[in-house]
Image (cartoon, rainbow, N blue to C red; front, side, top):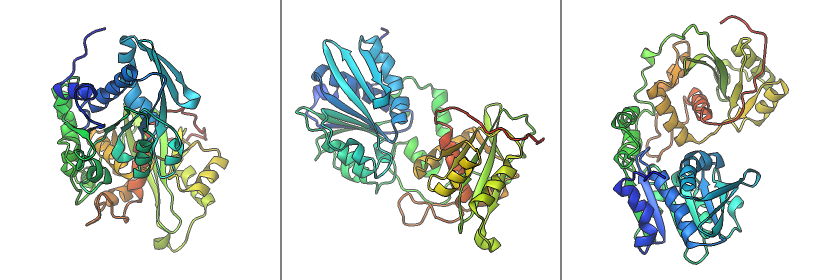
Length: 410
């Protein structure tokens, strides 16, 4: 196998368990800085050289995230080193064999406050928590408590959030007390990232997100959420023909409801039309059935491959499914969704068109809540939530079963 090109910081993450008397490793810093790869490969090598027939935990906000962000990078390298890999998909388990040893690695998703039950009662020799700052504190602490085998260690990676975040306060600021090695990564620590790609990521972010995801600082948010977005510069919707269609929905009864129609053209998703209804302003609430009819009108006879809906709108989701629409409950992680939406807008992967006047109004008003750490002001946010749902759905896997309705010309 070809010799791996590793930066000095990555080499530290690879060798810390051999060279220092630490119980944990914490890697934070810029996006695309190579920290997840180095930490993940180090974790497997540590487990396979130090233990035999033990159980380990691999954790992220979702099991799909474990596979996509960690295992997809690490598995080819381990195979090149002679390790054999047997995955039990239905049980979210992986058996790794090599060097006369065999160990079991279990995958866990720490999405919400119900997640600690998934890992409770398990005995682990080590646990890796990728994107630790995006997981509930209760899940992270439960995972750490499961690591009770002699010689076991904890491994954390994350991108920075606000300075009052519990992980920053409890782990990073107290790394010495917890016998944890703290390593901050910069984009320059990833030898696989070209200068041109680094420049592109640097252009993607501004304000607090630049300081967090480019400079690697734990800093507070303030002002407009999408301070780079200019509603006056929104383009007119292109004529098409569009290759794919989706709809995203933020459902409201007393609060406004916002639906967006998205078309994909030449690799870019355009939000070309919208439906926005404020029951308080209009003086009348709509029923689930009436909202289904409004979605049908917004679709306009197009082949909609997916309808992404606020996951708390249980009755509306059921009404859509009864009507035959292919519904996906949205990923409702707010801060991660805002980060991804900002990146997608700045890169031009998603475009909000001039016809979306309610969205334009909300972009101009959507701001961080004064004095509240990483919280958005809960007004003028319904189109913002729905757009965030759509962007979070772009990285999901799954099929594209569509509902075919009578086509009308756009």
